[in-house]
Image 1 (cartoon, rainbow, N blue to C red):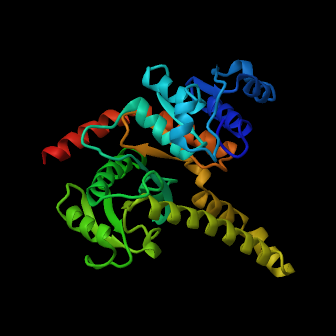
Image 2 (cartoon, rainbow, N blue to C red):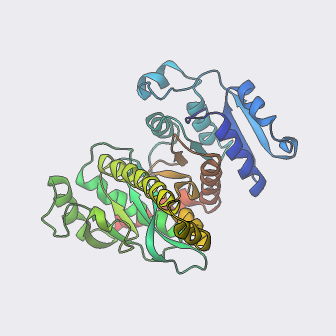
Length: 334
């Protein structure tokens, strides 16, 4: 029931995902509204889709703490409890981020040795990936779960981000950087300066500070920061992509010559759009909780929902939580 166009885009995205994978999908929310949306799909009966009716939801303008306390049958809370009970393998929501984080924390608990959860957004980076047909990417965390952090939290984010890069992006030796206002160790505020010192001796491949302009350079595979900074960086990036596309469209429509150029370069523009489209990844996994949660954008399209569900299924199938537990234990021991 979360997202700007809920439940339509969530249902449409679930249908697209169900057509791609042999995995059951449970839709949690207003049963009648979900059934109406499913009725638009002629192959609905052939898909492994189940509805769990809940009479309540958390609105975007509600306090997550108060809403979850007042609404024990809120859809995101019920969905998280289904995962905790083993009736589902992962949770996806495009609704209230704070409520999703709190519901996941309450239902799953935290992984041993991890104090704070972090949202790991996957962003495009320059260069090509070693895998055929794959573009290079960078993992940014935290991208919105924690407004305030301590230096040791950024070290934990670095460890979790590296584990995610290995499991989801197939990066064998993830390079970790710290987002700051300068490359020098002494640059930044108290948080970044102290975090830099801790990361130098942490069991990760720390490559130093990175400025915002180098975020997409491909010089790091994982970039860590507090959630306030990360969320601003993420939102600026999304807005910039849309602005660049609009400007290009306007320029290419100006003259006959530019329109001809557009026709000749359409494939390159389509490839560009695919590389920078957040819908290709669909959402950000919430790392640190002892269960798989993927958080989507409120403006998530059906394609984004599909991609997020596929990501959640891949992480569940790869035993990501168990791998993260093992890595956390090994790094604490070191």
